[in-house]
Image (cartoon, rainbow, N blue to C red):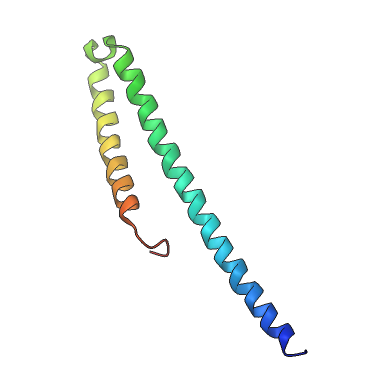
Length: 87
């Protein structure tokens, strides 16, 4: 019975580590979803108010939003293609 105890300890450590990895992945997934929702909010606001696009001073801001959106889209695309959460 004394040999079971060290094996049980080791199994608990392995399961605990696996749980931490899975929880961390779930948190990353939630963060990516939050990013995607925020992008949708931004574009909903832009589309909702047609006047924004007509204001010349907004062009530079809209260009920066567009650039940031492309970067976020590339990040989300690469993130979603990750098959193994250990990568």
